Structure formats: structure tokens, C-alpha cells
Image 1 (cartoon, rainbow, N blue to C red):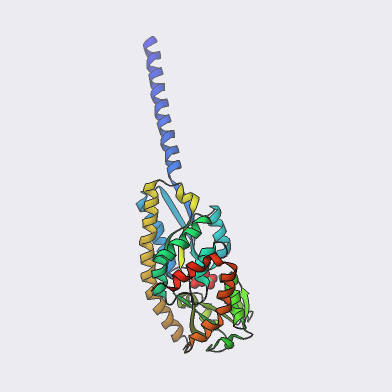
Image 2 (cartoon, protein in one colour; image 1 turned 180 degrees about the vertical axis):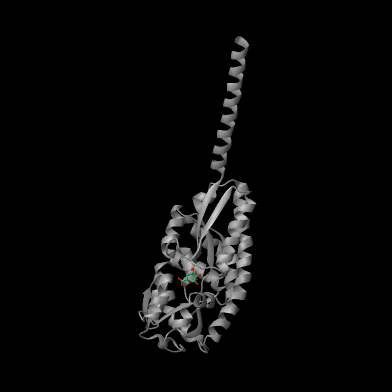
Length: 335
Ligand code: GTR
């Protein structure tokens, strides 16, 4: 009796020990495993979409399953301005954002939204990979966002439903959709147009129903959204070169172990290389597709006239943000 009782106690103890271990295993797994949500505005097949899916796969692989990132593409988790706030708050962990709509919340990032501040896409990346990029990333971090990597979004040009644009005056009286950032509204006003800030998802209908007469974007976005079907004049002003970031909520990133921080950073860097490769291909494919669809593309012989028209925009910005002067100079002086 005594012996059996003793055995029972031992069995019970062992069983308790096992269930304790099981609980520990599950709870430590749930402490370690994190489920992240990621935001992306673009649809299937777009360079950023492919690269962000690759990023999610690499994050999972490199953290050995400790982090699962689920990407929500096509802006299904809300418009970009709202999504930036969601990532800053940590409701979404990651966003693939244009620095354009981030500018109003992180002043250093806003310098890239000064029209013609970069000389070319190549020079923009040299600046972003150097000291200027560091200062912009530090500015983002102060606002709760860590830029893990930068994507290429080429150069943006004007397109509209009516005519080729050759000189700034051609935009006189035209209602032009812009992203949410006062610099872009100022840019259109300085050319005599009427700026209309609007979410990306609304632009197709707005062009189709003549709510706006024009908009501006790079070739891949102009093509992927179908805007070329309803606005058939694309004029190569290349007035804005806006890098895009793979941005993570700063607190979430800082909460990771050193090993996982490294894994997530590497995943972003690697997938950004893929994005830049795919970008080059897509830019050409999109150009060909819109041409074949009958879009009238025109070069702009005198870009200096557009640059001159942007002088008050630059001056107004620097008067309001004198401490950003050195960053603007740093960008302009990048070879
Ligand atoms: C695209 C960019 C998007 C979004 C969009 C827009 O080129 O990749 O993030 O900013 O332009 O015009 O709203």
C-alpha cells in the first residue's frame, strides 16, 4: 500500500513535471514567435510586392521561424498616410512606404520631396547610401520608424487627359492629383495648376470622371494602376525622385535580440537588391506597354524652366526649416 502510494506520487510528480515542461515550451515559443503584419500599396507582380514577399520569406528563414511576417498588399490595410501612423504606433509592424507621404511627419525625410533636389536616380541612391541617407534615417527613427532598406521608385513625371506638357505654363488651370504633402501642392500651384491631394486608390476614377485632369508618377505605377488607359499624355518632367523605405516600428525592432535584429536587417537589404533589379526591368516593360497602348510620351527639352518655377517652393521650405539647409546642400553636392 505504502509502496503503491509512493509510486502514485512519483507518477503524479513526473506527470506534473512533464506538463510543466509542456507549458514552458509553449509559453516560451509564444514569447519568442512573433506575428507581424506588413503594409504595401502595390498589387501582385509589382517589383515592391515581389520584393516584400521575398522579405517576409527571408525574415522567417533567417529567424528560424521566430518571426512570421504576413504582407497585406494592394493597400488593403488602408491608405498610405494612415498606414504610416499604424506603423509608428506599432499596430502594423512594417510598411513599404514612399518617403513622400512620410515627409510631413519626419522633416529630414521631406527634403527628398523638393522637386529636382536630386540630379538623377543614380545620384539619389549615392546620396541615400551616404551621409544624407544616414541623416534621413536618423530623422525617421526620431519619429518611431527604422528604415531597414531603401527601394527604387524611379522618377515621377506628369501625365494628363488632355495634352503634352512642354512648359510649366501648360499646367495652368489644370487640376492635378498629388500625394498628401504640402510640398507637392506648392509645386503644382507654383506652375499655375490646382493641386488635389488624394489617396492613390482613388486616382483612376478621378481621372476617368474628370474630377482631376492629371497626376504624376513613375512608369510602373502609371502602368500598373491603369492610369494610362484614361490619361494618355505622359510628359517626361522627372521632377521628383522619391526613394521608398522598408520601414519597421522602432520599438518592435529594438525589442528584438541582436541576432534577430541582424536577421531582419539582412532580409531587408537582400530583398531590396531584388527590388532594385526588378525595378529596372519593370520600368522598361511598363514604358513599352503604355507606348503600345497608344500613350503619347514626350521629352521635355527645357527642364530648366520647370526647375526655375520650383525656386519659390525650395525657398519657402528652407525659410520654414532653416536647419535642413545643410542636408539639402549635402544632397545637392553629392556627385
Ligand atoms: C507610387 C508609390 C506609392 C504611392 C504612389 C502614389 O509610385 O510607389 O507608394 O506613393 O506612388 O502616388 O500615391
